[in-house]
Length: 440
Image (tube, rainbow, N blue to C red; front, side, top):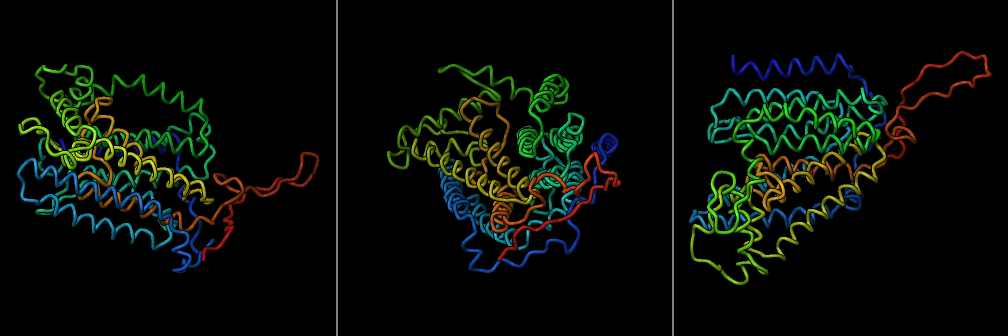
């Protein structure tokens, strides 16, 4: 019965959301409408937002450098570095594959992908916990983390729902997007995985703002979230609560720290050991191995390891590359005239930006230790492959910017209506797909 509770919660959540604001499953353009030609190779090279690739490749390389440093400090055999290189190749293939078919195909499968993601988040409870958490679906020696796929599926489903609706401009119309968000959040919190769960709500607000939701309604939604925060606190595990409280109980220099406070203190200590230029240029400044001990260094705290290895220039390079990636992704969204593609681009960029802010913030004591990885840099196969998919979708949207529905990109076109003084009967709204420019 314990394993059936998450599935029951998902079913009740879907029923509540659909009762409050039933979705329209006919929103995507019908098959054959607005078809585009395949992008020619010459056009492909001209339109591809190369700066996204230029920013991503050095970040992956810095991840290799950080993982190699972790292996050096722990006396490892290089197994994790070799695995990360293999996953990087798989991520590159995923990125390339995601650019080939038109992203508009995903519109039809977005709700199905989100439902599949929710089912996978329930399936994880059928597997034995690893380190006290049920986050992985195991296939022999291989493991898959469904919460990583759920992030992308959530963005696709929310983009499809928001792209032509008008009811999200009212407070009641925000209930279904909020319900769609809380379903994966609650399931992921039960794993438990606080870091991944924290990503969804900021992405929701960014996409609602980009779609045109009123600021006053978003402010009311934030106020309601603050009011229910005590209820969310009671649903968090003791370990998750300790990660939040340790943020306000940081140990002073010279004091002993334990638990999550130890993680935070070691993270800041390793980051400070890099000094101005890092151990790669100046050599290791301390011979005591305990000083460099940092749990989950190759995944959650890879930013600290890079700071120790490359110093301030390395930290500035990492943050600068992520800034370039986010800026170019927003430029892709701004240049896209098709609503689904624009909202997907905004959501994917927000997904990357929020993860970077949470990961870097927790390593310096500005945010709780949540166990969230740094995109493209941290060790992990599921995360790296999904991030390759994210970049591939951004490249895909950048290659095909020339489709729009109407002059108002997030509304269905309405047929002309007679004026009040005319006696002609009023015409019903018609939904029509208006391809503006053909690719290629």
